[in-house]
Image (cartoon, rainbow, N blue to C red; front, side, top):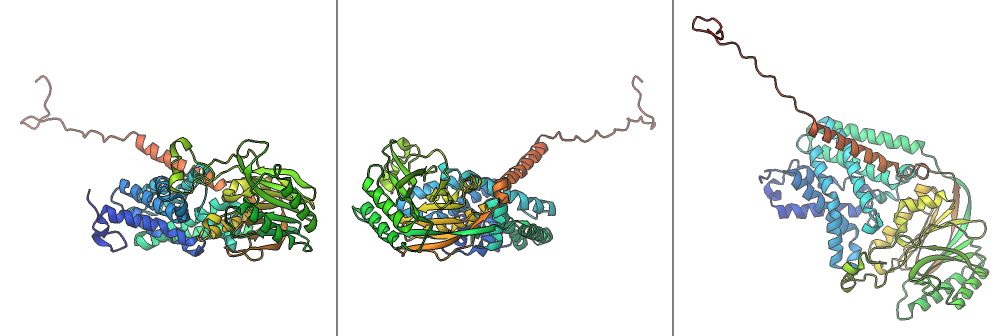
Length: 532
């Protein structure tokens, strides 16, 4: 294999001729978008973070090498945005990142296919559609809960940008990812290919015009009132008797809410470590708290159920008379954290990390609850907040407020709590419904129906109860009405590409007509005649 003497536009010379050096550069380039997510939250960096990765893949000497660049960049990306899993899963984190990183191999090949060499205006224009579509397909596939779920979608890095949140109400986080990748493609062309700068600028202008028009047109939430919702965050509580101690701490914090007139009190994930049917004493204490505060209390039970076999994580509503009967069992479980896929084959993961010793059981359907005072709430548990379709379905079913109960205590000293809390802003903007993100150990946060932050975050060092005045809104956002249409559009773009490539591959090639051969002549310059 002959390697190019220069990397176009970079001046790196022969340094990248080594496959090992190139592999390291690809992994580092893929890791760069990590800085756009919390905790750094350099949201603006997302619009150029993919440029080094794109430049590397387009300079690959072969399509196969570009696919390797895509794979290794994907490995770097997955490892970077999930680096906080290393203490829990150890080397298994790298294995998972390598497997999921392979999803970017076709994307690397597409980068070289459309941007390699000196791309024409047509190729650049196509790249502005095809490459973001290819990226969306990667995000769609890895969003399957069995592969870890949609953690670290590129568009979710824009959680604190008001125009981006408005766009999320139109096309969800998928539309944001598409636009961010499109801008990166245009910037890469501007940097590397002087001859193709005009179509790249035209692409940027067209993207800006389309997003501006969408931003102006997209409807704003129609605020109709507000409710007072309290969040109880007990903080880190360890030890052999941690479940009892945590309950007592949450109980004490909830008592401080008396006289503050909350409409609902929300505790975090695994806030109750016992089935309330088996512990009527705890149920009675919760009912007393409900009477004291004048509000229902949403707790989260992580225990073996008395009426079903196995462990469930469940949102349970408790009123002045005890549990109301409203219950939601978590449907989408965290691979390895709450269950081990194919435990008979992968059960060894428990010996190298903090994988689940016993699988949790899944719920069967989402639930909208009546939380007293006429308030309808839709609960989500832990990383279910990363799934746009779940909050969308709750909004369709009539939820006025989205509630997320989470823990993240295992990842207390990492970027995970901030990143998890930021996801609620996207879900609120997508659905036009406020969202409350309540945790055991932080970060807890509340967002309005447009994704705007309400009040202050409760950080990982806080042990407190806080009351938030949460605005309510009515109406249906385009995303709730039309769903994941950017994903469907991306599928159509890639289908059209495949059809075009297939047509070109199987189209009969035209054969050149045989040249007309003049008749042979005799020595007397007369045409030769047969038979003479």
